[in-house]
Length: 454
Image (cartoon, rainbow, N blue to C red):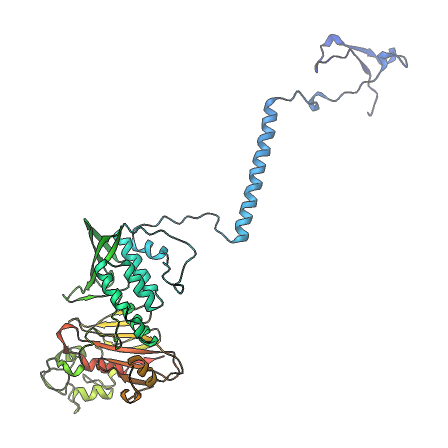
C-alpha cells in the first residue's frame, strides 16, 4: 500500500459477503495503540474482483465450451485426413438416371474373362429395365478385347433364340487363326452404331416384349430394338437401323465367324458375279458415280479435254474440270486416326472409336474401313496366308498403290493395305447390299488409290 489509511476497520467477521453496517466500526488512527485489536490493518480485495457463488449456469457454459472445442478438433483432424488422402470433402454427384449419359458414364465393366477390363467402383445396373439392360450389353460389346469376350457378352445378353445361334458360331472360333479372330472382332465392333448422350431413347413395354426406339441426334437415323423378358431380365432379340431418308435397314452387332470372314455381308458372292449398274454413256462410270463426281452421264468426256472420265480418274485427275482429282468439289478428304481417304462429299459417314469407318450412299450401299492387327515384322503375303489359310502359291499378287502394299481378298470385295513395319493394316470393303449391283466400284478403287496410312 502506498499510504497508511486514515481510518481502520474493526470488523466482526461474518460468513456474509456483504456484512451489515452495524458490524463495522470505524476508529481514528490516533485512537489506536500498538497491539490493540482495533488497530489491526485488514486489507481486503475490492468487491469488484471477488468471486461470487458458482452457479449451475456457469458450469453448463464451461461444459458447452469444452464440447464445442472437442468437435472443432475432430473436424480439423477429419479435414486434414481427407486432404492428405486426396479424397473429396463433399460429393455432390447426382444419382444416376435412366438417361444415356448417366448409364454410359457410370456403367461398370462386367468381367467376362480375366483379360476383361474392370473398374474400381461398382454400379448396380437394373436389368429389369429394358433400356438399362440394352445399354449395359452395348457397353460390354464395345469394351470386349477379344472375340471370345465379345461372344460371351453377347450370348449372356441375348434372347434364347439368338443366344443359340451365337453359341453355334462360338464353337467355330477354335478353327480361326489369331489374325482371323482379330479381323472378325474389329468388323463386328465397327458395325455397332455409336450411341451418344444427346441421342433420344424411348421405350414401350407390352408384356414380356419391349421396343426401344433410338434416334440419333446428329444424323437422324433411327434404330428399332426388340427386347424380350426372359429368365428374370431383359435380353436383346433384334436390332436394326434405318436411315432417315431411305427404307434400307442394317442389322448389326452379331459377328459372322468363318475362316474367310470379311467385312461384306455378301461374302458368299464373287465380284465377277455382280452386275454393273446403269451406265448410259458406256464410259465405265455408272450413272450414280457420274452424279457423285459432277460429270455427265450422256458423254464419256465431261470436261471436253480429250480424255474420257474414267481415264482421268484412274490417272488422278478431275474428270469434271481442271487440275487434280482432289480439286473436285464433289469429293472430300476424311482424316481419322492413322489414315485419311477421299470419299464422295454427299455420302454419310460413321467414324468408330477404334478408327474404323463406314461411308454410305443414299441407296444403302456402303464402303467400310476397318483396322486389323498383324505382327510388325510380318509381310503382307504371310499375313494373307495365315488369314485365309492358303498356300503360298495361292496368295494373290501384292501390288503397290503409292506407299501402300495392297492385296485383294478371294471374293474381290475387300482390299488389304499396309506399309512395311506397321503393326496393323487397313481393310477396305465394298458392300453392294441386297441389290447385288456394282454401283460404286470406281469410287471404291478411287478410295483404295487415295488412302494414306500415317
